Amino acid sequence: MHALMPANDTAAVAAETPEAVLLLRAGAGDRQAFDELAQRTARPSLALALRVLGDSARAEDAVQDALTKLWLSAARFEPARGSFSAWWRRILMNCTLDARRRLRPVTPLDDIAETADPAPDPLADAETTDLAAQVQLAMAQLPARQRAAMTLFYSEDLSMKEIADALDSTPKAIEGLLLRGRTALRDSLAYLKDEIT
Image (cartoon, rainbow, N blue to C red):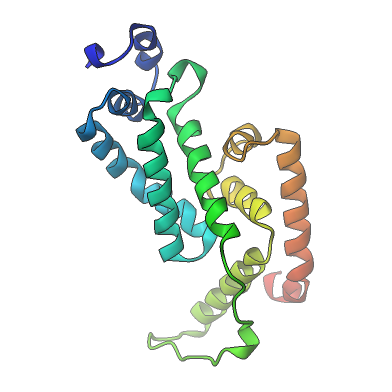
């Protein structure tokens, strides 16, 4: 394995993840290493993209775009400059935000006929599902960068620095995005205050 890696990266890789080792091998032209790396990262990446985009087809496209960029830039990965996970998250978030910007406006919910859910519908499950849907709808109304920051902070439990790295920003700017996102959600969901408490 070390024969495929540049000598100056060997020490850095010793402290890095298996994904970083696979990426270095892929950067040296090892397609099998990249295939394994793609299999390891695809599912969690798809879950993250889906939370940001809210659409499974667009999330799959964003992950595919990100994996393509990862393959094309694998040779430029330098473990000494940062972790694989931070580097990958930044590529993924860029592709996800690009996909979010390409979204066309959707028909307002008021204009769409309601369809009945064929599953059993106990009252508690219905209330929880309804509340989650309203929160998701409110999240969908946030600007793309606010939504991405909120998703990375609350769903992925990342630090401000990790989010800043993923969104090519600063921790202070991320704090602002989170503050504005929480304020917008609080304002748009104010009518639910009695239901939540």
